[in-house]
Length: 170
Image 1 (cartoon, rainbow, N blue to C red):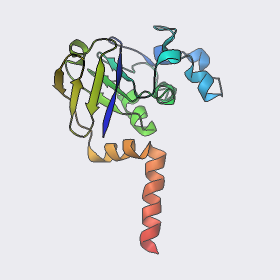
Image 2: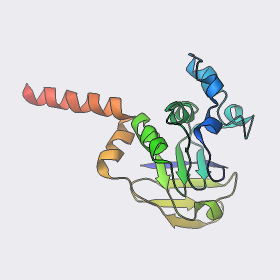
Image 3: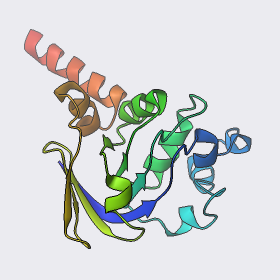
Image 4: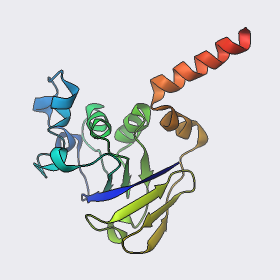
């Protein structure tokens, strides 16, 4: 499974209130909520990010509160993956549960510039910066987490598993 797109670069300690400010959590229209993604740092982000683009970040991406809306709005905008030096554990798990690929990749902050074309091979554990001709080794998710990502999230993975079990019984 590979994800390829333009890199949007963010620094260290990007917390969930930066990804989606708390004042927008009461919005019930998912597209309206997603339209406020990253507006604290980049007011235009939600309007110009394209499906398949990747977020590249420093250490501790997704720190702060446990709101799953932070991963939800990124996925809703079509972000193909978040690649960071490290993640806050709760954001990492929320992203996987929602089917948003997250990849830890040491050195990514130096290897990728804003706007670079980047490809991440999730199963091979390789990030390629197409623009700069740089390649980095990344952490590979265990098979059970890759299954959740490939299924589109934990709920879809569970539905798939239950369907297979039901088919075996018949």
